[in-house]
Image (cartoon, rainbow over all chains, first blue to last red; front, side, top):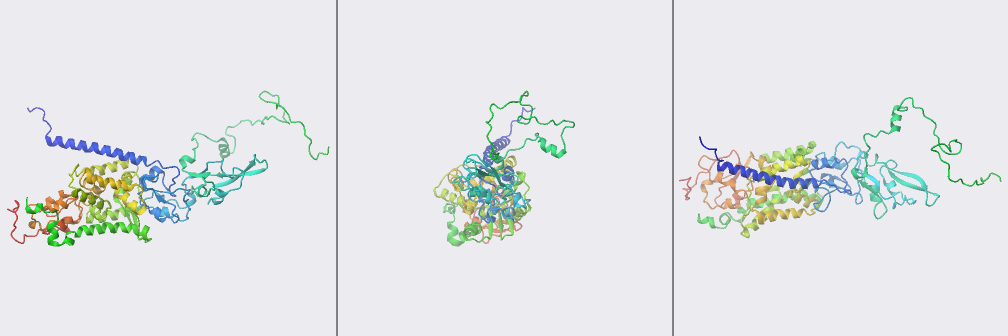
Length: 276
Length: 302
């Protein structure tokens, strides 16, 4: 009976070569994976074209052909260049402050996309969600200072829906209004016209990617007033809704436990026109 | 070794056939490479949008879609099912290369080919050692790796560094630092590994090689009886392992170069002073009879 057969030299060599090759490929593949994953960090000021799939899916779908860029009539879109731009090399993006999206009705960039990286299901440009405008700097926004700039509001293609002017009292001057530009994310397409046209040297309103612009409602959090409206009545049957007992004139609970009395009262002032 | 073996490569062919005929396919190839690049540049340079896009995906005359099948394969591996346009585009490209040989892409279209050819030219001029020579099938392993990484990361992985599309997109859309990748490939071929990139590593070439395994267009060493062992074809061929089976085949063995590694570049046709090689199709396996009693002393002919 022969002793344990030694591996033939050819077989040994084959196994060694294969192991070496597999090791080399694992190394190369690891480096490539690191590069490919690294490209996922889309910078905050780079916006994808309308209809773009979520970034992780987009990078698996976009073949970097540039046809969307070619068909963009306003030269809004560019392809990211290696080392010069933040997004994954060769993928389309735009910078709102440079050239915003003009929101063409026929969405030619989506039509041009051969792979569906820009979702052909997007037919109405108002449904696009390239990002969401956020008024990031209330301290410098002219409208918040009490002036009437209104430019972001005026240029908004979805005016009065995506951006409204909310009136409030101007406490500084005491007798003016503040017209606060207010973004309503459910209508904002993220086109970036507001950011582009902000008159300040650095825009006070910016379009941010959804992940930065928005929070998310907690799944478990149920809003009582919505639930009540849905049900059309109190959620728990038989709860007696007692009158609210508030401090103030006309109520009798000023000294009740938990109640309070004001520490001072204004001296009674003569009422103008009372004929005194 | 034959006396002629020591002559500079191609000298005999230039003397007998003239410089132009001895560089016919090389010149045609450069024209073809320039042509395919120019097609994409007509738009951005002259406003003639006959062809828009890049090698990864394009649209010709607003109608004909073409898609790089390897890019699409990575997209599929990444878990994205593309729209019909891209699938049709890839099918057309696959069909074309099934016919004319996958690696025709490498030698007649790919913009990196002039770069690595230039590196090889300088490499020979400087008389450098051939350096690191990984096995030819390394590229197949890398092709598998690229597809695996695409599947694992859910992205089109090779496009993160693919010097081919980087260079072409760079010229058509804007270069950024893509030139650095191209320079790396050049330096790699010049200093690290003779014919290293296209010949051993590039997974795109590996993919197109697989595509052309059964392609119709082939080079045949039909005139192999006339071979005078000058070795010039071995010297110019970027994949010279493909020549021997056809050229040195015994009687009854096919003169066709059937290896999928052959790029159909035609340099062997150019450089042969006795016209051993010719383009033909894969079913044409005829062998020219020796016109005069062979003066050579090949063992197989003895």
